[in-house]
Length: 134
Length: 134
DNA sequence: CCTGTTATTGATAATGATTGTCAAAACCAT
DNA sequence: ATGGTTTTGACAATCATTATCAATAACAGG
Image (cartoon, rainbow over all chains, first blue to last red; front, side):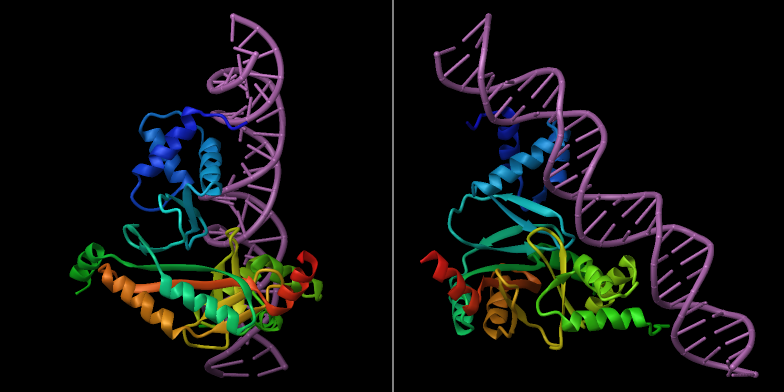
């Protein structure tokens, strides 16, 4: 049976309070900084469970790290992620859904799933960086 | 100055002969199986260079491994990948390009890049699997 | 072809994220 | 409170990748 522990709660809360995506390591550090004595392995397990039950989103950073994010939207959606500050916007992408299905069908593929994530610089970071680069 | 070595050539050839995406480790194994004494570190370096010069595509597998694929198309494109047999089709996706740019712009993002890959079952595998599942 | 310079190689150590291990502790039903 | 079972957490193990660095080989010039 699945038991309820404060560690599990702590991870869920910490994830809820996080704006964008965060790695397991970073979340663990954050929890420690807040005074929680939670173990690293436990954070990994909790995040894995959360992702498995659909309560959290997970994706791979370009460096190969697994990143997690609290996910209230139960439906399918995609992400717009600032590559500088990590700000993440959830986006619905009906257009892309349709396109993906059509492309798959055109090539005889079935059961199409897709990975669609857009990386860029958010308005804020764009301003900051162009100010220096200009 | 950039020098020409048989190792570099071997990696390029092995990648060319590979149908879908392959990991650095797997490519190294494959080369060894073919009798090449090439070192693992060299395979990593060669693949990194190939990806850097645009001669190879790279993406992250769900397990966090980096996968590479020979890429003749110099332009930007995406992939339709069979999750059963690994067959990969390169697809142009003007529609998605436009969509990604628009979504990014709508949220004030600039310098939008995107990861768009479609996974599914190719016609062949669909037939094989539905025959058993039906 | 021979020689020197220097990029490249490759064995191995190092790194860094993640998972496995397993005894001790915590949780929940009784 | 007690017992049975899950969960925890410190640490070892694993796995992909990168750094190290002496030895090697590629290329230019003679």
